[in-house]
Length: 115
Image (cartoon, one colour):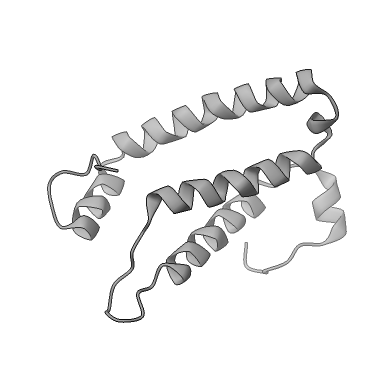
């Protein structure tokens, strides 16, 4: 997606995977910019704070969704999202390129974390 914005027709037409990827990229870029250290040439990826902030944004997003109108529908949506989150996390863990970046960023062989 080359344009930073979308048209109303495109937004109303159907789910837009290109726009999803664009949003993910923008969110990642915002996290990197917010994580830049002011006193050194480093980025501190604070995973706990990142997860908490993203969870808050997800909750606000779901509150705007029709699924929020019914406790049963909301529970079904949350359960489906939990399954997808688990799958996406396992994919990232199994991705050799992602693991290589993790090793390079954290300067070590242990990329499992110790939070």
